[in-house]
Length: 590
Image 1 (cartoon, helix red, strand yellow):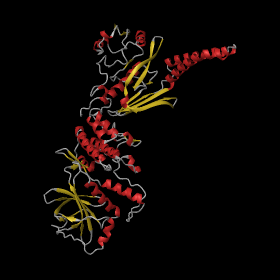
Image 2 (spheres, rainbow, N blue to C red; image 1 turned 60 degrees about the horizontal axis):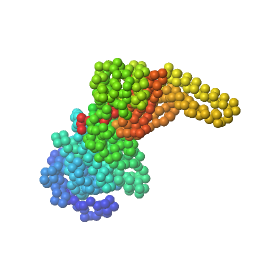
Image 3 (cartoon, rainbow, N blue to C red; image 1 turned 45 degrees about the vertical axis):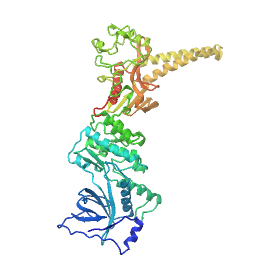
Image 4 (tube, one colour; image 1 turned 90 degrees about the vertical axis):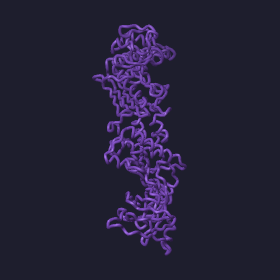
């Protein structure tokens, strides 16, 4: 039979050990040799009874041993299973262990959520040679995700979504408390799944207590009375699953979001995130793990952003996006599940009109379309014309007469042979586009020659005006010509030396333009501001339209891709638009 006393603080514990009036614990002899359990500590035996305040806890088996104690499975008077965590005073290495134990008990006592095992009790037991500190809580039904995967279980993507949803819900609850509670050690071995019911539980809040004690002792600047050196920071968490900011001593509810993303990635791959390639602390799982759902892939990618500011603002935001709730779509202005501009096919390519009617009165192939009424916008009637587009002079005039309108291919086509444009999709939610400098092409040579001739003539005229005694007044008439010459020279320079790089994922875009290796300008921002990519006519030379690409970013579009062949423009435009449509499309898991 065992008796117990209520838990004192560490400072009163020493005085109580000196007292002769200590409660005693009487143990039932082991049933057989070797029945003592508890790892290196060997604290209890099988079927041993531990009594406290009328409650009887019968030890059944050891669940595991940690740095500061052993956890047992025990049964109560009612036959319910509980987890009994026991800390031995004799085996304590420093006072921090006791502080951790008491803080974990207080933390669990203040939590009330179905996914967190319920707190039952905490108490102390005295024996002839030791004192034990006990913490009892309900046992979460099921097995840890780590154990399930190690045993060969492989979840489907809908199952991963269900697990991630419940995990984010409990993290949202912890973040809603005041002050917020950060678990700090969310990982597969601390997430329990009951495969029969699908219920998820989050266990082991020891890291939360560890962080609180570390901070308190560091602020006091002491050694904790037991060899623990304060004044520094202690990393709490598991490598590969803890957020990068934890290594710098910073923590917030977003840190647990990172761990939730790493846990989801583990379920999808069966591998720890630390075993995957990384770039600048970002786990490059795309290409290593095949994820069918673009929404799930995008959710995991954003949860795993190295910077807390780049992750979801809260667990609720992550849940809304993962479940595809109204208002959480990446580009929801077009309606849920409705890809932008899907209007039908023409010769294996898809187009949509932009900024009014660009149809005008120009010849396309062998047929004339005099007005929009004869063309319904679906392009179904165009299938008989074949894939090639007639880019002759009539088409150029039609484009110009239509007010510099554009085409926006939305379907991917075969990569043109001989192109130097790099277009790579990594997974289903990341696109990298690189347009290298074109060099001195025939078109660039023509523009360069014209720019040189124009500016040379302007310089000669200006010098002649000054030399003839006309003064600055007559020379000033050349200013508009100088501006025109600058634009022509700039166009020639860009066509020869301009290189562009565009990176888009499910949440942001980053555009950079360089010339001769130097960054000339760039744009970045929320991908929701990008409505698409289109081919625009900048000018017409000898009846031929000079086209480039325009990334539609809010009210300030970005133009790039000058000097590309038209088939390359169609290729790049189709890649960008189809990617945006894929990301915006409703996931089958929603």
